[in-house]
Image (cartoon, rainbow, N blue to C red):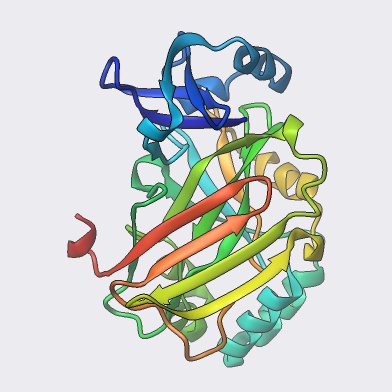
Length: 288
């Protein structure tokens, strides 16, 4: 089962439902994902077991990004050894910053996107016009309720400018936060249906004019941080009344000088969670 956000064929309004692979049943009385994430996980599970709303064929429903309302997307960095190595390589003048944070008690956490800027499955992601090297970063996303409980999992593409971040770590917000830099989806796999989040396979492929130009695979078993520790730091001094998505870092980073190009198609799969596919465009105007 997956929790999906979509445009209801009945009301023509955004709706939230549960998808069993054949049918999507709307959650009666639930106006959005953010509203759902105000509930404790135990109550959320009960609601999903008895959705009560109209049903639609899964094939007729186009999923929207599973973030809305006042939800935010945050991300963790340098949580895998490969991520540390990539950051060190691209940031020769400040490599020790990434070496130190890898083993520090406090993790690297940064804001990624507000809900309305997030692209969904089948949508567009962007490379910056003022950057030479931009890459996708496939990551397991924790879907957190208002109380900081993990309610489920999703797929996140933390698109990043390696050129800008590599020039100076203080440029991280510009490298990570811009229109087209965050894709989430296609849905939320409930936490009670995933036995071990540290044993999920991750794959990514980039195709260009119908040919695969980069692919790789990894596993969340390589996580250097505990998921509950990342969540605890995020909620330590902040509140998320409609919940949040916390992206947990990447272990698949293309070697330099690989970069995304306009027209590329990025496909990210996480076992038991789903597959997120996006098309690459260049610059701000292409995202408007």
